[in-house]
Amino acid sequence: MSEQTRTVYLDDGEQKLELQRYRLVVTDGPGEARSIDCDARRTTIGSSPDNDVVLDDPAISRIHAVIEVDDRGYVLRDEDSKNGTYLEGIRIREAFLDDGATFRLGKTTIQFDTTDESVEVHFSGKERFGDLLGQSLAMREVFSLLERVSPTDATVLVEGESGTGKELVARALHDHHPSRQDGPFVVVDCSAIPADLIESELFGHVEGAFTGATGNREGAFQAAEGGTLFLDELGELSQDLQPKLLRALENDAIKPVGSNETIETDVRIVAATNQNLQRAIEEGTFREDLYYRFAVVTMRLPPLRERPEDIPVLVEHFLKDANEMSDREDVEVGYKTMEKLKRHRWPGNVRELKNFVERAVLLTTGDTIETRFLDAADPVPSEPEAAEESAGSMATMAIEENLPFKDAKNRLIEEFERSYWRELLRRTDGNVSEAARIAGVHRKSVEYILKKHDISREELSDS
Image (tube, rainbow, N blue to C red; front, side, top):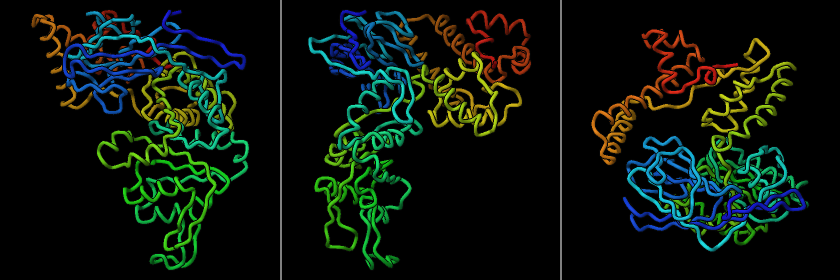
């Protein structure tokens, strides 16, 4: 166990991770002398604005690397970046960070320094909360927060990609509230309602308020009285409506469209977004005061690709439901298939995994599901622009490292060979003969290339 982190086991089965805050200091490259203080268990670094640490460096990938903290210490992990992550001059996939260590992403060199301040991160001792499942630290951290927040009336903002389970969080918060769980749970999808109707949908309207308003109608706030109102896709709210919603939240009261009457409300608000609202604030499309009114408690649901250790328990859960749905009992998943599922990127997250299991059970003619029922293979650069960008970036890195032309060219060729044969073998389900036929080379040459790049056809084949 690291001296900089410590795990404490509490009486109720919960774990508490005590860690030192750390600071990332840009010592060379774009943004030199910039300092970023970090206290989260997981910090993403890259060029995309969605990262915790955003670096303006064209040689850095959108999500380039991540720093994760556990009882072993601080782990720097490369996220399959195009130009690699270098720790003390050595390219790494994963390595522990010591205090004062320097690492390089693209053209940017960063120093890692721990501070004297400490922070606590709590993990639930349970692997389920409501309909949310997971044994990873990332999900148990979410469960711990849900356990503490659910009995309160605190407004919660849930952030995460599509398909991660944001509505399940809202439902779980409602179901675990001691006094609201028997009240209504009302969902409003802000992206699915026309801008000229969303005010009426939320606050209701009176007869004659607008063309077509032939009678009084209650809005979502009144419908959720005594329960929970879940506002999905919050970032899609029009700017005209935002000040009216802010007023309703601050006063616990609404005014139906066309009415002068103010109606008091008693609802618990949970909102969700797959957008970066902080960036929307900077761009002027989302009010900062409204954001902070929603973000009393914020929680981020991790994408499935960040928690592959949860895939087996999710697959088994979905498999049980799919077997019942298709009136089958014998369909299972083999070890090799499970390993392939854990390596898949799952852009649609848990929703995509659930759909895959259901589809695989329905379509399989045997007693095991196969990954050939996935919609697509792992995404790889396929457009000429993407290939050109990748080659250009590698050339830039080679020049930065003063590599001779021959060595730089060999590195590019090796990277291409590795990517090409991995993708081709995935598409042929590990069939070397078929891959050789498609590539137009002899099978023996393929076997030599696989051995050269340490690519196992067994790990790429279906069970």
